[in-house]
Length: 385
Image (cartoon, rainbow, N blue to C red; front, side, top):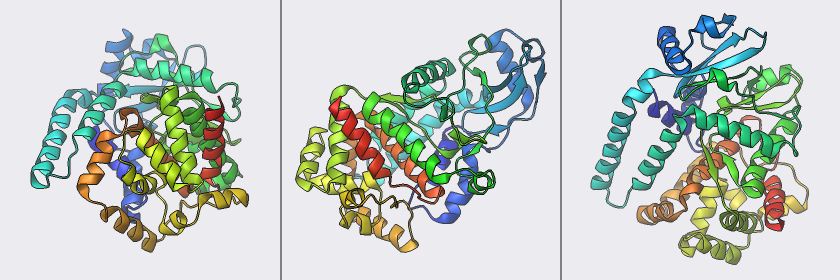
């Protein structure tokens, strides 16, 4: 449970992870082990001061989803509205500190065994975002802010962020409107509904590119369990517990990094990398980590596909290409890799994770869109503003 489920979610989305790992661990995104309903009933009463029967006309005691921190139930209000009720699992809070202590101890042991392999930066970021994610009032505020922020760019038929019922919510309970949909990586179900996969893939990439480069307020956990597709092809974005804010200066630097990668301008990339406080000599390794693409794509300027208006993507990996990427990564000294992540601005760590998850989403949909074209447009728009 808790942190360990999150670790499994992260591994499932790694482009170089073996396929069996990805297939088995993807269940952790919304179908992890269930907890007894009576535990959640008690939590709901503690947070809202109401019994389940006092708050809802109907309540299905079987969770529709269960992931790292919470279980989600379907219910109906006395006003007749279908709602989703997200309730934090009681053991998560009880064991969080010991889980963090265990993981930090594990990192310390690894560092003792291999001094150049330091994970202090990861331990601090894990402690930070787990603390944020445990507070559902923060999630409610983030959802409202994101909804208002994107309202002028995407109408509700294109993007839906469920509305929160604050009077039935608290620090460990979140009640929001229920929006039916299927996971974005359930390709067979999407095809059965006649959904245009390329349109969905392009729109989800654009949503996050605009968040990152234009608005600087970024949803940090876009794994497939948090992205649903409605019968009419609308995107439903869930789980707003952790966001990262990029100020104007950091957004400018981040946009320049991506534009220099897409232009295959190594001199500009060295300068942009240096502006982030990273050793410019690590710019090519940083490029590999950011783009997470096989050698064939790194060697061919990404700008070429944009100029040709090529919508093909580089997000699908053969086994040989996975090995090639891994070989390139392992060719860089561990000390240099560690220094890169230690010096990277903290708020970019989860933005990197989000970028990797979006690459995974595109791959699961069959890589129908060129993500770099979308990033190019949003990064250029962000710089212009």
